[in-house]
Amino acid sequence: MKKSIVGLVALGLTATFAIAAENVRLAGAGATFPAPIYKKWVAEYQKANPTVQIDYQSIGSGGGIKAITDKTVAFGATDAPLNKKEIEAMGGESKVIQFPTVGGAVVPAYNVPGLKGDLKFTGEILADIYLGKISKWNDAKIAALNPDEKLPDLAITPAYRTDGSGTTFVWTNYLATQSEGYKTAIGTGKQVKWPVGQGGKGNEGVAAVVQQTAGAIGYVEFNYAVQNKLANGLVRNAAGKFIKCSAAAVSAAGEGAVSQLKGNILAADIWNQPGEAAFPIAAFTYIVVHADLASVKSADEAKALTGFLKWTLTDGQKLAGEMDYAPLSASVATKSLDALNNAKFGGK
Image 1 (cartoon, rainbow, N blue to C red):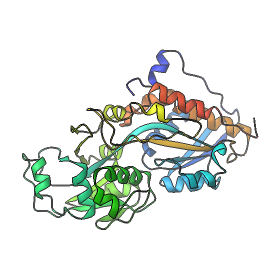
Image 2 (image 1 turned 180 degrees about the vertical axis):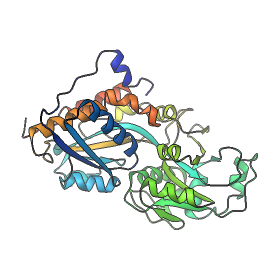
Image 3 (image 1 turned 180 degrees about the horizontal axis):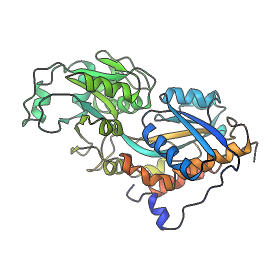
Image 4 (image 1 turned 90 degrees about the vertical axis):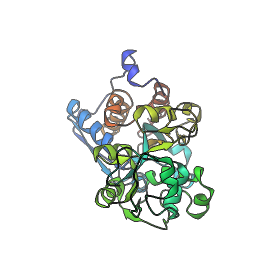
């Protein structure tokens, strides 16, 4: 993903998208993972297109999928790609469009007083923390990775999401690649039963638990860790390198994803990818719409919706890196645009 869609601007390929002449209002809902960039996109788009009013509610991926399935919003947002059951609930594969918008990452954020630098973690250690097998910060396994730190005899409080969450989906799928014991005991999904710790709703809720609890560790989207000034650790990747999260490290994890993106329901798993520079807990986040835009009321609303979404995949991408997300590569963005271009309204 070395070549960003921003490069399309330089190549003269950025399109001007038609929008509605009349004032329209559009609603979207779903993942908290991309909420900061989505809200930034809305604000910037509305400056240039004041006739289009867009409201995005960060209610979690599960809520976003339910809302678009029930046709109560114009678009849904999810970090976990639609599964077979969810696709069928929307009418089947021919009735759904899903495409990546940006890349992001889930990081282990922690509140351990007195540390000098960033802690190092392995996937196995993170799994053992969430299994309750490692319960103190001065545990020998953590200490062995961080010999220069004086780790306190302080209880670890794992923080987790209480709502159906794409962030949880990414985190649990990553941990399942690192620990067979974790995979058997807890498993994967948008919502799982954690044996220890304290819950919070949304990335905001987990970040709040970490901020307010000495000894806490929580899995949050990288942007939330940065914006809330939460310490977040280096994680050992598949190549054996300890990587600090960055937009570039997320882009490195997305290399080669293009071959996985096919049809109108685009999805690719990019956690635990090979490559020395890849951050291992990375993922795309997705927008979901009906192939025939049945959740909007008029042709003007359909034009406004597709105009906004196409803008996010072109001009909007330049804002991603500024907000600690990874812009789509040109080839991934083209796949997303191709899928979106198949949307219709009333069969047209």
